[in-house]
Length: 631
Image (cartoon, rainbow, N blue to C red):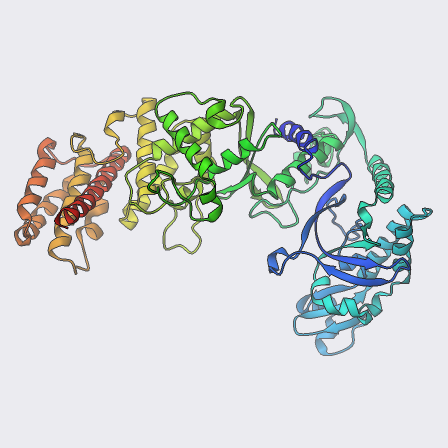
């Protein structure tokens, strides 16, 4: 299902003139340099691609297929490769060089290699492996291009035939870029204003060669994607761009041990996928993972999403819901973002607000609401790294209208009173970070939580109890609750109530303070906030407060703690100028509490924290209102 959907999306992208996606026999590669050749085969110039940013010193380009390579004699690539293959020169770090040539550590000249340059970081040398790779690179190009009368081909072959790796640094252009060229950047060739790998006649030669080579390893079997008997792929292309996975890419389909094989079928023949289908699904995944439009990060998972249409409006709107704008509402009721691009996109911000209001009123979304066909198929795929392979963390298929309704319902369930600053929406990524200690250097959530949370959001089911428990633990340990944590506690309790798995009534779980709420844990949470307030008003410089000493036990074993807290409160009330109001508040809150519970269940602890959060916000709001009235 996943691979079939990706293959269909490839066909859509390929027919879209606005999208650049590799055709069969090609792949995307990071290209750092262009070698500009003269018609006589001389290296006239070197052009560095990319920006000055050290992370972006390359351009993604469509080049002849670069399949995974491994082993002692990895094959060269056609018309695009690194300096070890193109120039026959290799850069080794100091430790690697001394390990390979132990005599060098004693200050002796190592035998079997020619050192071109050496410094504290490493050594530039020509030795057996680099010479073998250069010869393989040269041989591949002679094999494919010999016998043609294309001028650019003659230029390239002349350059390769005349090149001597041991004199590489004698060339002034290579001297200028030696620090970057020899550290791994890919090189392509240009002659008379045209990239060689894009010249149609050369491309045709490559495609013929690629088809012949592919046929050598082909095994005919029934393809799991098309259902037809056709050549199936022995190895699948690597998927690049998944956070945490190997930079060279990881496999979505692979078998590397006998224990995982059956019927004597080795490697990927165990899951027969046609070579064309394999190319389509891997190319589509790599295309989306390289795009900001189709990719987000949730926990340890890298998530790609797409709609089965060439219209990009679905992805744009989905991206907005996955990563809502940060900021606050202006005088026109529009939520402004922090970055310029989001401020300019006020239309989408208003559309998001309209959608939330319609879902709140229980109305079904249609084309006018979404600005696109609500019945378009929509897909979400969550991938996580697993050594050299990828794990599918979650997979979601629905029509676009249903997807928007479910994610809008999530934000509505999370809705809670908050400060005037900060984003009104908490993204799944931010929510997961709330389960990690604030003091941690890397606030990474448990890998399991990301998948569980997304499944509950996308399916509209109850939130994972593991995450609810983790949020409660963080509140108790840190004795701090913000609107993100309070919002999730409210959303969890709401969905538990709706599903009937909780005795709590839905109307008691409110966005802001509900003074009529008779729920005892909720009232105890409110009481704790009142006691905390009176203590802070009478003794602002206390190092130890009732919050730091009693919050955790008050939210779990009230009967043990509250008699002590109420006794302590009398000392604070006696010193306070507004003590009589505090006494009134305590009496009002305790009017429905006949006895302090011995302990609170997990759900009751959530209601306690919700009451505590609501009362604190109410105390703060009343203080502001009073200040305004006095002015």
